[in-house]
Length: 557
Image (tube, rainbow, N blue to C red; front, side, top):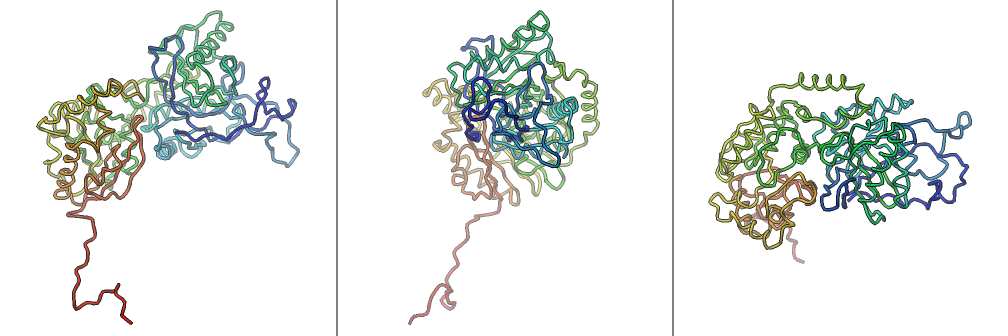
């Protein structure tokens, strides 16, 4: 869950300022916000019935306000400080005092990894801060004018969409205010000049996410936001845009917490885990962003010193394909389109966007390390091979259909990285082929689809299988046999396993050297690291020699 923001003072309904602050007092300087990321409670889309609502796009943190008649920062009139003095805020920093910024959402536990990645992509100039659930990117402090800040944010948004492997979406904050009811949401939407973003011939969609919002209907809040955009464009152009809930030109994300309403423009469009190469999927496919997070947490960057990588249960090939693109330095966004390409502020920069893509293609290189992958099922190995071909990395991965319990070691040392199989992929003979499907039927259809992301259609039983892993005898036997095989044939290797079962090390009879918290959709998991050695890691008790004194013994008397 996101970090709960500090309690702000009661505010005036007319001014949005603290009730104990005079209305004529100067407003404080823009705060340096560490925006908290909201958590998806429910979502609605403007122009869509509740029964057909799709869950909102990944969410953003609380940030600055837009100003009526403009989409970007404009200088505010403020009390001029005396010479030599440092400006001080006139009161507590409210949401409306925060500067425009980008917000990159990510699963909980990945924030610091995403922060490091964003710094590698953007360099040292932008101000980047982490919060729970994402990071915030502001232009360099040396940029003063609104035009300079806007150009810097546009460049950052393009680079992050193209290069980020860990972010779920890149959101552009356009407006923020303290709210009490739906009329305040409408007023929030009217603070932005929407003719700066789209034309009346284009389409829009509004998704709503919330954290402890007091509004009764989030769907109605989305409708009020849609009304604000349409009314603004009608007043400025005489026409209004249409709503497209599937492929809008302008995607908006409205986030509501207890006090603040924040409005974002989604520059990504489809979630960034959709790289553009996945067409063949198996049961419960792993998201590409989570696979990249596993590799980043392990410190594996595809360098020769990182060593070869093996995924013995690769499924549709998500982990080895991500690893192959990393070692070949292939940008993850090269094979897809983005929503910002249709937005008006980005049109003057489309030539620069093409140059960014050309530079990304030019830097691609041969693989620096070997990558091995396979699965016990011929069908899954075939899916993974075809996905690797579409991703442009089939030459960098050696696929082999083999049982993970019998597969020989491909080289002397390396890294094992995989998301454990569940259900029918555990047993090669199919004796537990339908066990999880039957258990899901007993619990109902709520386990058939991962509620966190509607784009992943898991087969019935996958989620219940993951949550009840420790109760399944076949799964426990599989992992005991797997650890025995590793101890015999993979001595000197390092294994990383993602699992929702906190007792996995005990089930495998291995001692983990590290565990990292990660979330696979709504399911809390651990990424365990095991340093594989022959035999047992447990210290052996020293045998007592009757002729040798025990140092723990004390002399009598």
